[in-house]
Amino acid sequence: MVQESAIFKEKSLKEKKCIDLLNKVIFVLNQGQHFAENEKSQLFFNVNQLFQVPQSQRSKLYKNIRRLVYVLIKELNVNENEVFMVISCLTKDVQLTDNDVFKANALRVLTKIIDEQYIQNIEKFMRQALIDKSQHVVSTAVVSHIDLYKKKGHSAEVVKKSTNELQDKLYNSPDGFIQYQALLILFEMKKNDNMACLKLLFQLTQKQLNSDIVKCQLIRYIKVSLFTNSAIDKKTANLFLGFIVSKLSKEGESVQFEAAKTLCELHEVYGSVIDVEPPFQVLTMLAS
Image (cartoon, rainbow, N blue to C red; front, top):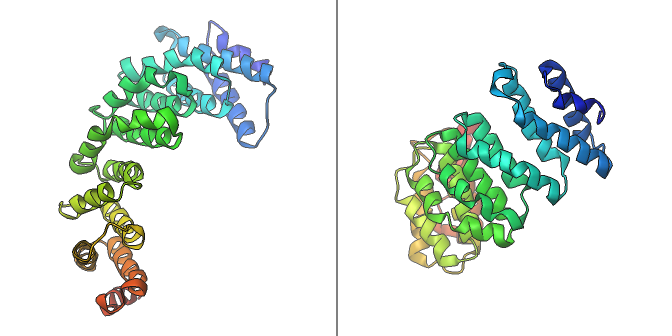
């Protein structure tokens, strides 16, 4: 397959053959097959040539090739010197392309492969992507921040600089799934600060939330905090419990189920403070 990859460098691009070969390489990588270092380097170099295809030679199939290229680069796991070769191509896609799919995929690959020493090179593009006009790109940007934060170290510090933009997505995005993603990263960032964590959860209980997935995740985080957060006083606990009880009715089934399940679990700790009859009725209704 490494020798076959020379077709990626040909002046006259055979797009169907390229697609078949890219699919084949991705498949064997996902099956656990490993390439020798020199083979990976050669394959990576050849694949990188597909970024350079002139506009005049790009047919409708080129979009499929480009998507596969992004996947393959993520899967190859090449060394940092080779990664540096492709960073400029990926950042160009993030910064200059009008194709939202290319932009989102390039951003996803960048945060997956980039080494800490190059992270500052994409910090600006990451923050710009959070305010992109395309919700697809914004969603990818939030997920990319999650991936970077998991790397810890300097990557996590870069993510913290985008806290204001992430909070804006949580509180103001019209897309419920983006709100959900923003909630995941913000809670992860604040979970070791008890007061900051409580402030985040309290603010969300006071907002009109329209997404069921956000409501469910908020209930889960409130449960975690009620079990583990030592900064919760009786007044805050009652406020949180009241919020969960309010979700037993006039909500989607997933929210009702999450609220009922959570109240039953919290009853083990809070005892008679929680009336288990309403959540039990909800669970019975949903099971029937």
